[in-house]
Structure formats: structure tokens, C-alpha cells
Amino acid sequence: MAEFDFDAVVVGAGAVGLACAYGLSRRGLSVAVLEQESAIGQGVSSRNSEVIHGGLYYPTGSLKARLCVAGRRALYPFLAKHNVDFDRCGKLVVATNAEEVARLDRIFDQAVANGVEGMRKLSKAEALALEPQLACEGALLSPESGVFDSHGYMLALEGEIEAAGGAVVLSTPFEGAAPLAGGGFEVRAGGAEPTELSCRYLVTAPGLSAQGVAAHIAGFPAQMIPPAHYGKGMYFRLAGKAPFAHLIYPPPIPGALGTHYRRDLGGQGIFGPDLHYVDAPDYTVDPSAAPDFYRYIRKFWPALPEGALSPDYAGVRPKIHGPDEPQPDFRIEAAEEHGIKGLVALFGIESPGLTSSLAIGEEVAARLRL
Image (cartoon, rainbow, N blue to C red):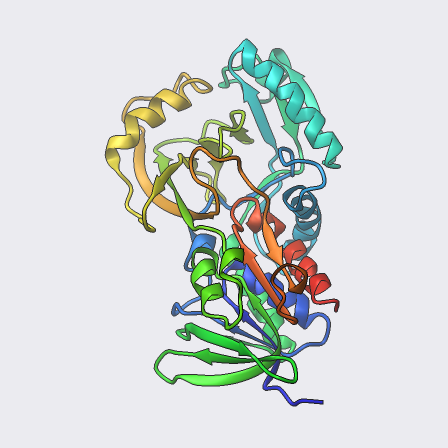
């Protein structure tokens, strides 16, 4: 049997890549995680809402539905075990007009079909009893939704990987890989000290770089690499006391869940993200977007004071569909799809990827038949 430097190499040290490495480490494999940045979680994982999603919206049987629910069920115990801060605050999906009330019924049915626990339909009076400053005609309550410290979570994953004898190697970009004749891969890594290493299994989970990484794997079919689209979302922070204890979401918009409210773990209110397609990752926050935020937020919080919002941060989602195309499922592809034994390639792991991450790691292990 061939000797390898590592049983597995994972490309990308964001939440999903680290969760994949953790899932493999739990099965006794030695794992190296290659990360081009100088710290973990510097891409998609550091610029999101840090929301733990219930799994309400996604088509039943889809990877998003199945892995979001399974990932969320695994995430809370993991966070508690590793003393990572979280708040299972619950979420209200609110209808601000009669048309949206009918949409709530469809979301409720979808959530129940997906196995989301504890879902409740609330009348206007019941919703206002929970959140008196809310303006709505009705709401859904998802008690399993919450917020958490995503960076603390990634540090805990990194610790688990290293405790199992693995390595998270920073400032080491993936430059290419080629299947070996007897099985496994030769992986080329760059950085200040370029190197080559061999592994039995290769997992690519680099978020925004997924397409470029796949293109540098010898033999990966070009037609299996989806087009890359960048969905930028900006966030604005609220000055003053946070108005709501629950997450507040409008019904979803095409391609995203819409501009929503959360109270972060420091007790401040944050609104976002909006959604704009951009040609390349761009993390600037445009102050001129504020009027749209005020107009949108006042649909469910009319008392939002003028001048209370300030630009905060922006994130970019690795989308595999354009602005006028239906939102696809996660793509987690093994030899059955691309023909390369021992390789699992991930594409389009946007929301609810963070919530789903532990379950994605288990799915990757299953695709490798471990």
C-alpha cells in the first residue's frame, strides 16, 4: 500500500473546510488543511450574519434542507461542549401585509416537511406580545434559530483537528494537484516555502475560489465546474438599544433570505445583508445604500430613528447562479460526478453553509465512503 504524507488534504480553512477536516479527523485520518490567508476564516466565514438557521425554506430532500437541519442539530452541542458563545434566541419570520401572510403558510409547511422542530404560527397579537415594536400582520416562530461566535467555532474546529494529529497550514495557497497512478494525489502548495505533499483523499472547500481550485486539478472535467458569481451583501449597524430579542426576517427574496435583523452577542442591532451581484469580491460598504435600508427596515420596524444606521461591513457569497436564475442546491461532488476517485469538490456553499458545516463534513466523509 502506498505511503502518503497525509491521509487527506483539505483546501480552505473557513468553517466548511475546517468542519470537513474535523469530520475526517474523527474517523482517524491524518489531515492537512491548506489556507492561502494568514489566519483561518478570512473569507466567507468572517463576513456573514453568524446566524444558526433552522432549515425552514429549502426544498425538502435537497442538500440544503437536509444538511441545514442536521448541521444545526449538531452545532449547538458542539458549541456548548467547546464553550463557544451562542444565543438560541429564536427567529420571527414576519408578514407586513396580507400577501406575505399567505407566503408564511407556505414557509411553515416547508419547514414542517423539512423536520424543523417547534415551528409555530403566530397571530399579529401573539407576535406583538413577543416583540412590541414590531409591525406585522402575522409571523412564524422558529425557536431553534440563533446566533453564535463563528470565529470561536472555527478555533474549536482547528483545535480538534490539531488534537487528532492534523495540521492547519496558513499562508500556503493550493497551486494544483494530480491523481497518482496507484491512487491518491500529489498536491502542490505555494507560499514562502513551496512544497509538494501526497495524500489519499483530497477535499476542496475554498469558498470563493472553488472554481479556480478545481481548474488546477489535473483531469477535472471543465464542464463540471459551474460558473462563478459573486453575491455581495452589506450590513448596517444600529446606534442605541437593540429593539428586538429575536431574529427578525421578512419572507425570502429571490436568491437570498432578505435584509434581516439580528442582535449580536454584544447586544447591538445589525441589519443586512442586501444583495447585489458584483464582478469580483468587493468588501466596501456604500453609505448611499442607507436610504434603501431605512425604507426596507421600516416595513417591520416603523420606529427606526433617522440617522441611527451606520455602515458596518460587507460579505460576498460564492454563488453558482446569476441574478435571474433559480437558486440551486449545494454541490458536493465525488467520483460519481467528476470521475476522480478520492476527490470531493464543493461548489456554491453559501447560506446556510455555516449552519450546515458539521453535517457537510459528515456528507464529505460519506461521499469518500469512510
